[in-house]
Every structure is written in C-alpha cells, then in structure tokens.
Image (cartoon, rainbow, N blue to C red):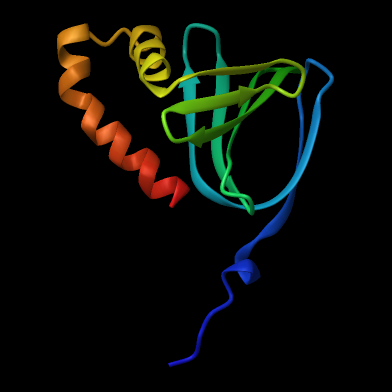
Length: 129
C-alpha cells in the first residue's frame, strides 16, 4: 500500500473581509453550502476550511445584485477553550460558552441544546483531529 501525503491535498486559500482583514493560509475545503433568501433576494455561501495547522476557517459571503458582504473567522479549539478571530479582533472563551452562544443565535431551545451538544462536540473533534 502506498502512503499518501496529506499535504498533497492542501491548497493556498486567500480570503478578504469587509473589515479590511486579509487571510492567507494552506488548507483544504471541508464543507460548503449556499442559502437563498427570497425576501431579500440574497445568496449566502458558507465555506469551512481546515488549515494546515488544524485551525477551522469559516468564510461567509452574501450578495444581492451588485452588493456583496464578506467575512471570515478563524476558530482554534484548544482543550476547554476556543480562540476566535475575524482578523481584527480576537476572542478566547470556554468551549461551553461558544456552544451556548451558537445555540442561542440559532434559536435552539436550551433543553434541546443539551440533547444536541454531544453531536456538535463529536463533529468538532472529527474536524480538528
């Protein structure tokens, strides 16, 4: 059996954000989705990359007609903490608080969140290795 070099699948990624931050890294696309909002006639494209250093990089691009917004976030989970940066500001918080914030922003009932949390944690561990 031939050993495959995992670095062979990495590509150079360059992202710009409307806050002026630019991000360049080597990584690979892990997940991608797009959503169309009929009310605003806007399309949002979400991409999740895993960097060579095992950081998670989220790219969010929304647009309607000639208008476009671009954001990116680097998430670096380490033990019980998560470091999140938009290229300008950085926030470090307990992973538990991150899950609470995500569930709250998504409108997930707190009782249902406890049921869903183990699945989210498992997915996070799979992505970061």
